[in-house]
Length: 120
View 1 (cartoon, rainbow, N blue to C red):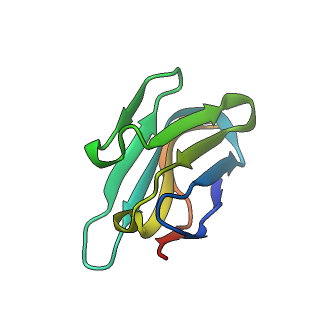
View 2: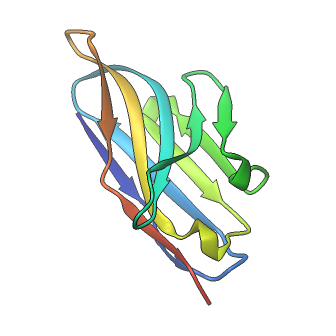
């Protein structure tokens, strides 16, 4: 199983960006999908999560600005980021709790990071 993230880049303050992350491989089902971010010298921080249904959670600093969503048919999670601030600059990582096929064992997978830089 692999998670492939994309969509990072350079954006000006106040701008928007959308990250995508697709899971592929021997997948029976995908449970919770999440986005984390990390800056140098700091611990990785949970930004947003979405359960297999529609339940979502956000860190307080992004509430009202970021929206997490998913396409279950494509095993893909999105993070729509708006009103971006310089403090949102980080490497963003996707994370997924996946039931492996055919064992049905549950594993946690990480995608490669994608850099988001918010700067004028």
